Length: 483
Image 1 (cartoon, helix red, strand yellow):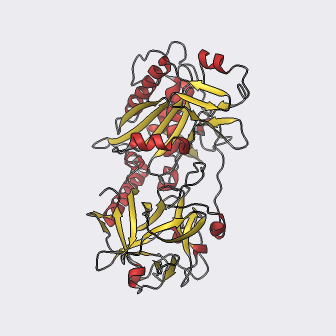
Image 2: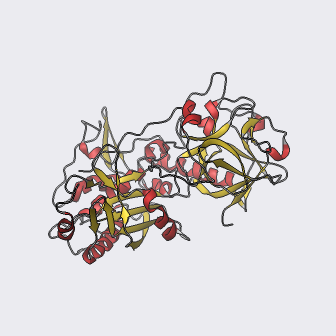
Image 3: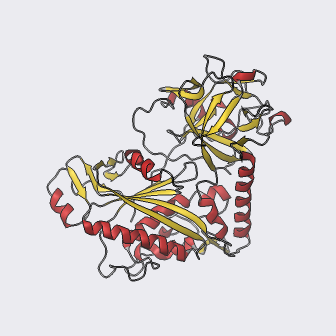
């Protein structure tokens, strides 16, 4: 049974300015990979009294063009995909896609990991076995989905030693994304990957002999999975332990049949990355642990794992086919992945790319400062990820700190109010922005509040919300990185 996920909390908007210790211009310290909780169809949280989420005429965005890419057209395409997926779900329609969704997986096997005195390594057999698991994952998920998804796995191995991380307050160990980000960046370069899966090996006779008697052996266990879910990051991330093949399952008889226990582990952890569909679409979508049944997940029946159906794979199949029974009152609805949901797992549906944002009057780049939540101008470029957030708005996050958003302090639509970086707060209007094109081809970063005020940085000052009209202080050149 997999470890249960920890409940993550949301920071209040009023705490943003006190709690942020981050920057674009400096990368100090190591942060736990906490997934952002924002989702594009979330009902906006209450705003300050007297404010409204409906923009005035002056605040409505015009098409934004960046190197020939229309942000408005990309937003419209994302809205269409969501609308069509909901319509198919409501109609119990399983019409397959005309073409399968291309889904790219970067899978990295870390052959040597440590924790204190503990030393874990893959054998040559482990490498061979992991290659079979990756193939089994790819082919079996494709077949189960009715070939609505076409998965391509790039499997690589890293032999340099990497340190495991201990989950706070627990004995579980895991391979933190921040620990291996350099390898992810290296192997993902030039590709378009939707997720990263990383695998280590801590079991087997050689590992037992190597670690027997060492401090922590048999106490600290490698966590089977740690997921970064939702669509707020440019790639998903899951990590898990390889374990050993069960008797009679190796070698693979048919790669299209999910016959390896480690395949079940990989599919389970990856399925956690799809759970955001519940919020995104506003429909019933099962938690990956819903096989526990009605005690923990009302409306779902209990499933049992058995020798011939590794680790609840019957349940996983039904979810990936959109045919898992969910009971509500006297009604039974089949839920899970309907065909038109598959395009929504692509990471470029909402994540529009990486950009630098510079002042039109040449004063510098929009940036943050180490240990200071405020935004200011810097001589050094800061790379920003721009993500479509629904309702013709966009979220802007520093690439180095994807859980942070450009935020209007305390959600106050007031002249001169500060604008900085903050974790997701639930105040959608304060953390999403219109990108409005000016007559000269530059852009205004405009609040969706009724005032239509824009992000302004006076020379040598900090970002604030001001009435339009300050020319260079409010005009921005948005340039896509690498274009």
